[in-house]
Image 1: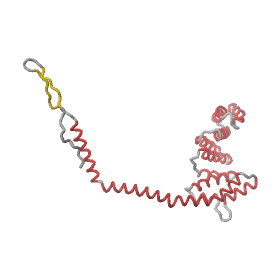
Image 2 (image 1 turned 60 degrees about the horizontal axis):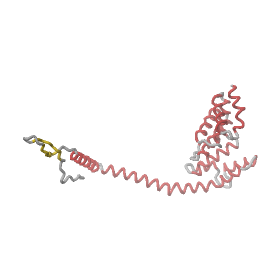
Image 3 (image 1 turned 180 degrees about the horizontal axis):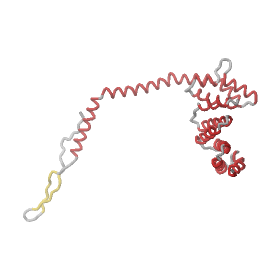
Image 4 (image 1 turned 180 degrees about the vertical axis):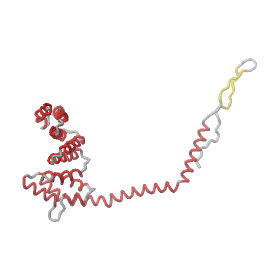
Length: 264
């Protein structure tokens, strides 16, 4: 067991002054009290108790260490041999669908609808966004397929599916995340679920603050709030646009709505 060496240790001497028969001072030293030895003894005792506990619980300690090591190795193995190949497979499978989606975004009219349909359902044996989102859930490609599918459904006026797929999309990118929430708000407006739409716009506003998405969703939130009769809330959003985003496109449309909100 661990011990602290105290060889040669002596208690410190304390100066003592006395007087002889002629009342002259006589200096002397006596052994003084010290807590140092007690501290060493306490440390000895603590160290001994720790070593005793370790000795008594060796099996449990090694079991815990082994479990932790197993979990680390299992995670590393999963990432290397399962997740990485699945990510690569999902990315390859999504290529055709994403290509049709990109073409649809830049198209218009019937051509756009046709391209979105191909992107969603696939073509020539290639998976579409809907199947990719299902087959590769948990991968980056599967997550992006949710966003693309939701956006495609929104543009094709299938608002319930738009909400469903966009709600399954997650992103660490603030602009991407805010845009998805805003699109959910747009879908709820079309479904005439205005309270849900207002909630979605508020979530979009909470995700990030910037000169692009913020005034846009403040404006949409204000319109919905007016329709719900929440005039004070609508006025708050409109004033925020006017004061903080005066150069935005939405700022040019604020005064008319603000007058309407304040008049009520």
